[in-house]
Length: 468
Image (cartoon, rainbow, N blue to C red; front, side, top):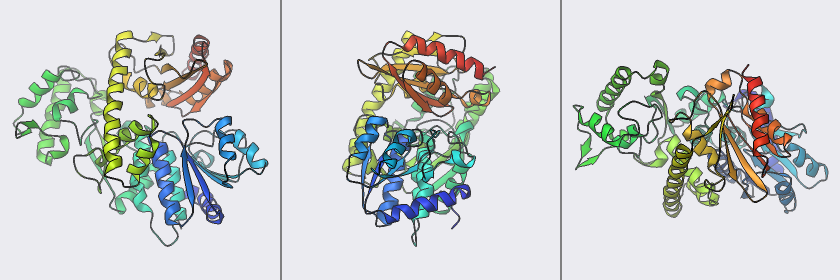
């Protein structure tokens, strides 16, 4: 069978065959949106294949957590959305006969090797922009399907890719496109050119424009200005006195709003390349209800982040697997809390500002921003007043009295110039006795508390060398 990513077919088939031989499987996955969707795709595929399994989530996979996994009764462990970067630790337990690892990941592999390893980077594909962890899990799911059809799981794989910031220049590329095509063929994904603003399904129109990533003078961060702009249009944008959402508009109404928005951007001097950012590709989950967070891949991924990053990965997994009652209600409660924390965190960064080095900018939130969301806040801050889009941002948050979490975010434009934050985080953290890694556009590390200044100096030097 030819899968959605032909280069991975043989590796996926080998992993699938090994899973079928297992008496039971421990499925271990990461806690972000990509990790949750990876686990959901793998869970559904294992269940459909009649393979007994148990699922656990880990905030990070270090030597201690790998040892904890090795202490379970499972002889086969499937790692999704992590595992490649921790192969040195995993391989030691494999050699000791503790378990057989199967890894479906997209992060940069460590030096050690293992037989059942499904990672796009091993086959010349970019794990930061062409295939997510959920995408790797989907490739495995397609190899596992036997006489069935797992293409419906493409919807979750797309959510994972979007949540992992792989939609560069407004759309998914590379191997991700093959998964999107299968989702379209299976009638679970709708792909269209659309307004590239977050909240198309759920945000009232003034909020949609007010919080746009592209700063349009008079509208961005200006509720009254956004309302005034919309009120001038010859379109009925309210129903029963309430503002409608983008999803509720018909095609003609959308064209009217987009045309006016583009005219405003041009007349107010927004740079052409930023105006282009107003339009992108939308990925709609066709089986979900119109006007809900689950209908849009970007909003769905935010909902998932609101669960696992607050120790409720079980809620996010249940939503992914179809629970639209109690789990979805709980996820929405968590989402409200998540949005409040993000808003407060962003406000803190904007008030306190960032420290600018020659090649990067950084802030230290201490305990003011939760370490599980400080990277999201850093990404949201880029491009706001006083925070440069042309330099990577590094964020620190307290993890414990002994450790500090580091999150770094860049842009795809910086990556094209040579930025590789995975290398930056790995080398800079190692220089202070920590450990890190990730992707070229987004990465993280854990370092000893008190070593932040030395870390910044090392990271600044490495980034300078990359961008020469």
